[in-house]
Image (tube, rainbow, N blue to C red; front, side, top):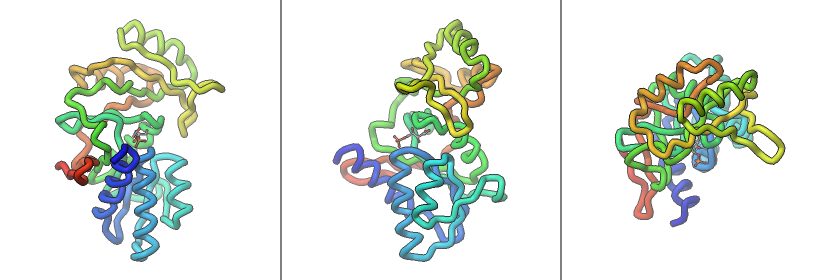
Length: 224
Ligand code: 5RP
């Protein structure tokens, strides 16, 4: 199976955990895209009554087009479950997210969700975090100074750019990626990054997830 097929496999597996009446958080990314497609099928075929909150404009639009009810996070009082992708997950279920520049909204939704599930193809499972560049969402004002500070800290930052300029998040902020190769102490790094003025949020998602579904050629593996 190729990577896309594994992403579709876990997307389909994840929606089996969705129950009628749930308040559901919807993540962002290509794996989540498959999950939202499968959720749309269940909503249409089984007339499920769900209220969903999306972690990006992209996901909100896809869900709405499929007839899934989407509300703002501020208009719901709780979320039962959030299903999201990830860029790396280590042996302790700590993760890096933000490859799709959505980690700020993803983290806000995740911390307001009773349960969090990540769905990934097997290439995302690692022993140690850091091969995948760690994303930071930063306020544009003064961001070159934030970049310099991160350089001085030895964190190897680069702005995430397209041919036309800065990648912009849904909150109209920039993204800086930290090229670290290995993260030995994720909690310490998270605390350091939390202390930098101008960094809105980093992509270290620590102690947040209850269930991981890993796509493998011989079938999805549910880890808890
Ligand atoms: C977006 C994310 C995504 O969940 C993460 O990048 C995984 O994406 P994909 O499923 O496309 O590999 O954190 O900000």
